[in-house]
Length: 287
Image 1 (cartoon, rainbow, N blue to C red):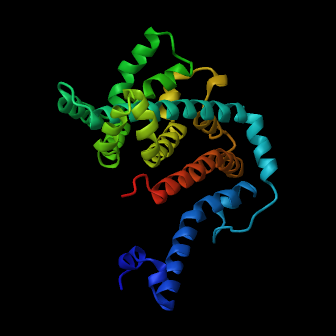
Image 2: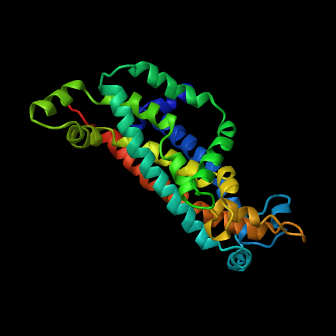
Image 3: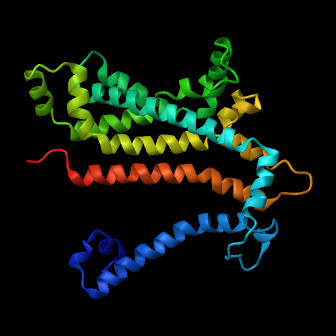
């Protein structure tokens, strides 16, 4: 039995050996995935030379707070963390809402040039992001939004991938019969969307939210271009400041800051992944 076929099977349908092999593969996969994060924490709890140990150091030290104190001395870490949390949350909320609206319109409504407009939206995915930096920067400068959160939030409020993702999911998940039933009951367009479509497509919205939050949180290039004042820096810009050290890189300090900056991502992922699993397993339509 191949590994792929084994993973596709229900563990209850396997024998004792198959079940043991199934869980062994899952445990090994989990350990391989967790190890880089654990090692980052180990380096963050030891001195700056821990990263050069051969074999790699695997024991947790007691210098995490000392290392992190040096982070606080060099950067306004928690303000940058709050800035990233605010920007990522605002962008994610707007992307999920507007992309869901647009995807619902493309999936369930008929209007002139519908397919041409959708293909145009998809075509923007093939344009490298770097080509849009200069015109976007000029627009932000004309609006006097340089060095403000508006320059980070407004250009990212809708994206082509989100529209494509929601359109594909809504096309198959939201049945036309449900929409017609809502219209017969006197529901308006937005009420049908909010009360009928949204409960069904919650898993897709949660998945889009996870992906978008992680993308905005990890974005470094655009905030570096438009942000000038330190009080507006996001966490990625703040982490970059830790690498400017004439005495050599303090890996204990860098890893302690990176570990702390990663925690919000893990929390958001765990919360939304539960939502996704619950939505997928509960089922929206029962025949």
